[in-house]
Figure: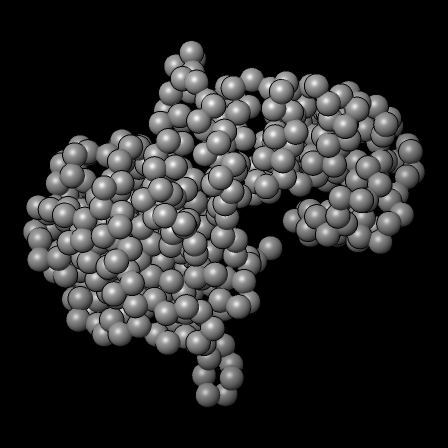
Amino acid sequence: MFSRRARRPKSAELTKAWECLDSGDLPGAVRQLRAAGEEAPIAEVALVVERAARSAGFDDLEQAAAALAAKPGDANSLFAFGYACVERGLSFLAIPPLRTVLSHNPGSLMVLRELVSAYEREERHQEAAAELALREGEFMDWPDRYLLVHNAIMAGDLDLARRQHALLPDPEDEQWRPPQARQTRMLERAAALGEPSGLRDWQYVIGGQVLGTLSPFGFEAGMAGRYAYLQDTPELCLSGLRRLETLLSATGASPRSVSLLPDRGSRILGLAAAEVLRLPAVPFEAGRPDTVVVAYDLDELAGHPAGPEIIGSLFERAPGQVLHEHASSWTDTPAVTADSVGLLHQVVVAPWGERLRFGEDGERHQEPADDRPEEELADEIAGADATPDEGDGEGPADTDEAFAAFAGSVRDTWLRGDRARVKSSGPVRSSRFA
């Protein structure tokens, strides 16, 4: 333990991480570990991680880090540390030791797969594909060639993905059948778009999801059409519903109702959707066909007592069922991927939530949540002005005509397969809060 070894890290960033632990700031220590970069001395990284893991109660990671700190060049210790880091959500720390072990054991598929897993969790798909491609003569079709295709798609390299996908035989193990079908649909969606480019195209390729509106702010600052922090408005809610209306028309979808989910936000938006789409609103019922299921935020729905069961029922799509989510998190993606989404955010405040305002004096004021009846708030959305915000003028135009053309192009590939969660941002990355 530290008291017996009396050792401390020497590099500046790791010293800062140690100081964060001195003050009980575990998240701050993790941020400093990330800032230290991949060239930080592995023995010093292990010292910090051992102490951090003890604070978090992660016995497996603490033991692996202690063993690595004692023997920083030992392959077994390096692998065990990397494995524990991946399991505990610290994949960025796993990459250097796993890469070191693989360089000395290039034929080890176990190490290769663990390194690929770490790369994937960090959304470093190009590097994952490169590691796999180097070992094409040694790996197995399932899972390794499949993983090569997956990471090539997520990196935006469709030529590589298509070449490798053509070499994939049908899997003998039934567990790989659903992933095979999803991967095939990804490539079919890419083919329907020709040459995918931009956030809306790639969002559709990787998840089958049609993105209604693009953020008009911060495009050149790295947002690429996603929102970071957003205080939502009735106008944005209506814009998303109007784009949903266009999508349904362009693809020939003919829902007969709007299904209302039980959480307050979804009920408000669902009532507004029923008015905009001129359809009757009915309580949600699992398996109901030919309906639009409307969620404000699927993560909010997950917190409702009935939410987990409902979300589980939405994984498999009922015939003619469309799942629309207005505000979808792109940094903590929902358990199911909606067919249509109004906008992508990292942090969102609903129009009826507690609002942050700045007065004329420049002081911040927290306004209470809007507790008006759901029907009144829904009417406000349906009657809002959906004229798009011009934003800062940096991003590409997001016109109704362009969206309608996109919607028409996906007519034959939309609403197919399950709604599996997509954890990666894909080829189009955006800046995010730490």
